[in-house]
Length: 103
Image (cartoon, rainbow, N blue to C red; front, side, top):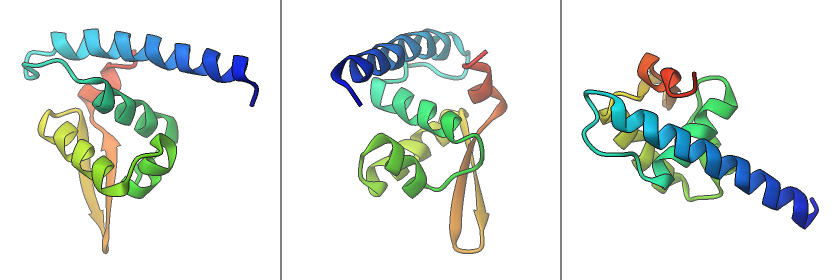
């Protein structure tokens, strides 16, 4: 990827983060704004388009699996992500409220 393409991609991500941050702060059950790292996790999960493991999200964000697992659990407690178990795997997906952030 060329430097210009990377800069353009980063600018788009930053714009999406601002939009999500504004929408999250307006949700009645979320009392604090989502920080950029949580918004990045939300965008990565949305981008996968299906329930995903913390490892799959971490592959996109380039963060450690344990870090993404922590972020995903924080998003679960905020009601933006839901967690389901499939055997030994824990899958995360956007909740109705989480999907509304992208509308």
